[in-house]
Image (cartoon, rainbow, N blue to C red; front, top):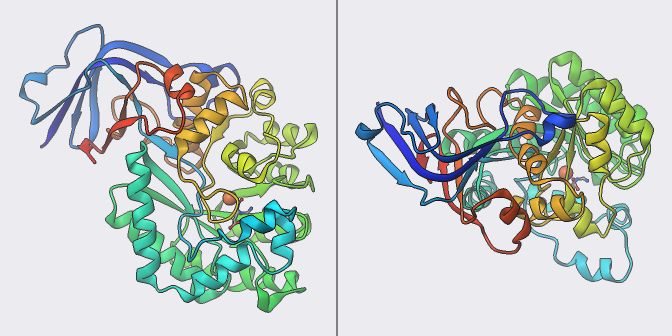
Length: 411
Ligand code: NIG
Ligand code: FE
């Protein structure tokens, strides 16, 4: 048995429970002063506060002194496109000259450019690159993350991507949750034949991914000029019948009914939602679907920011993620998304902490294991170079994570 004591925590702040937090509960965190945590074999055993130490603290194998700082649960990154070949810096001059995200995609660039580079890349190349990203994320305080496929867009390359994620989850300290996103774009060889491409997904890829247990979740890009609502609905219905849990890229650029579809299909999360309207929000609220908001993408695409406060008011659980990908958000820094959540969504620090811990954890099927600092959960923590969440929300551009602890081990 190995034990870890983290002592002298100035403030231990965390949401409580294993369910998605909505409405007023989104802003409810426990705030324990002068706290300590005892962990046993990577699991939280006891949490104490007001200077009291857990039983058996004196015999702990390892002791970390937080020196009076803020400690929170490890951050949970709920939306990434972690595995990809190449980069897309050559798109910036096009963008600055006025080309929109969907214009670049329609001209065969954007996601399709990354598809060509991902197809060319070997398993090892993709693995090594993504492994580096996971290391960087951990240094920024992330201890659990989601990773979507969707740059292969054919049988061989989608499976290659999913196997990279499977191996990363097995080898890397990060918990990596896999999402199959075969319906991310229509590949070159299916240009003008989106329906036939959806059939390929429904007839071959989805059943194979399920049979091989390569992903628990399934996602699609429901967007003007990509997949329309009927195409997306067909794919989601097949996925649901096969037993996938559903996510959806909805209302990112145009409001074409993606959020309503996500609600109708009982999706676990609807993601982006920059262009969502009241009808879409009503659908998410009714279905209990989590809104996975990606403010760094709004920033990078020069778009408006999703109506996060209205969602909280309506009782929609709100999560915040990075959307790390080579096009619309080439940053994996979830701390920057926290800053934007504060300044642009105008969320409170407590609401933001919920949005980067328990709510994304629930949205990726990890709510019973991570996302709060409670006995029985994994000992995943961040000790911040800050006294409180307000400081973390306010400072930007520096890495405020001092120490990241994953399953009771300093990483
Ligand atoms: O979430 N919108 C679709 N997918 C990604 C972008 C992928 C890319 O541009 O490579 C997103 O923004
Ligand atoms: Fe995305």
